[in-house]
Image 1 (cartoon, rainbow, N blue to C red):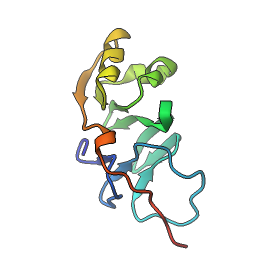
Image 2 (tube, rainbow, N blue to C red; image 1 turned 90 degrees about the horizontal axis):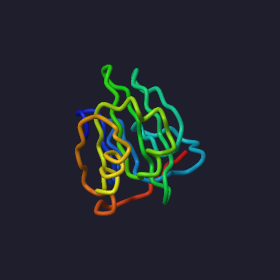
Image 3 (tube, rainbow, N blue to C red; image 1 turned 90 degrees about the vertical axis):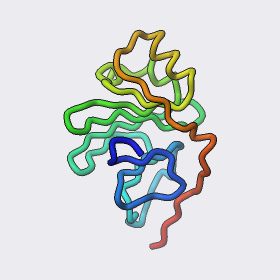
Image 4 (cartoon, rainbow, N blue to C red; image 1 turned 135 degrees about the vertical axis):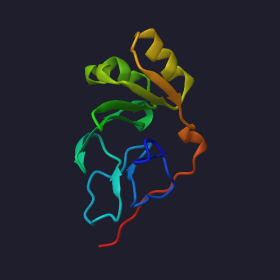
Length: 131
């Protein structure tokens, strides 16, 4: 859980939170989902919160979130740090692997860093919907 508002990499979506997937989901979703789920690259405005989702290596999703006037990022792929200038505004970094923290330091990006549990250690389950 991040900022008591977001769940990252949870096995199942929780309708009480904005759910951030670890990997890319399906291209099109035809049925309404019970929970707010971000599992595809793009820009989202949910409950007045701006969320940008970037695709990294190995279909890993990375996020830049503006919440309560603060920018924080959830990063799994160090490659997105080099390819996205929007991430320079980040004040707090949540990362999943040491190579991400090393890349943040190498690029001299400022902000507080916090390591999250590795998504590879988390169970994954594809979310299916019924019409």
